[in-house]
Image (cartoon, helix red, strand yellow):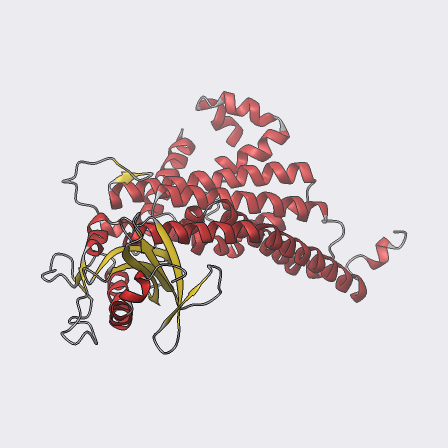
Length: 218
Length: 228
């Protein structure tokens, strides 16, 4: 059914590309199974870290890196790890890459680690990563798992960036730190406070579900 | 492999233990290696950041000498790297005249301990510069203590003048609500970051109340040139 509606709404280009199975592994995370807007996974960083576009982007990229590395390792060890201890093993692997990312960011730049410091360790508890390890990487080849991780990771980046951009524009009157409104603009401080995260996520989910319903109605 | 049909679903405890241990050792190795690999660079960056911060908080500073504060309130010159909490950095201009002393201070913020460095000018008896070294305050709100220009303007000349007998500060630095600053020793707070602003006010208040009299008393000592 989804194939039919796709052709009708003129998404033939994506449809053709998606015919190749490996492209599909990558593309599904970007849109059809977007971790933020469709799977609604990893809500802790999605709501907590997206008060500016830059924070959203950086968090998304760091998560993508951890996701990619842990998917590669989990996938290559999938025939070695007994299923009784798999969750413990995955968490160990994920925590290792998060720690390494933390050190790497500290070594790259003091300013970057100052901006992200509090969030990097949060990646350990992002259920998107454990979810992909358990649901995909433990059952698929390394190549497929890499594509899956990249797709999901960039999907996550898109999600976090969309939330961060809206919240920064309304809550701080700027985007990536560049002011977009005249000085007289009264910032909606609530948008960078925790409730703003929920409001913005609700708006985006509304938009996505509205689109989905419209498509289904066609 | 032949017995896969019989043993599937039943993994021996030994194998589980071995796998877990193997992964554990591998992960530990990776963490230790990346820690050791990045440590020199991280320490160098931190030292550079501190150095930059010192020169930032004391305007007009050209060279620096580091002093360790002893428990009796006197100072000893040290040659830089010491893992001591009580270090102050005296700054001198081109002619070698003392222009200010940079002091580190820390206090509890909203999320975690905030570490700052500020410049004290014994001549003006005022805080003349301020920089946040470490903070985990809420991004977008509490972290405005690091970059909000109105807030940072507080520390261009924050009055910490001493009483007649130079034993303590006349007024303790305190944070007030945004727009309610009336006196030179008050810190104009940030809307939406009340707790962080107050934390900065308090930690500066505590630190200057202790350090300003000591630093002022030792003004002459800091001005003595090296080797004299």
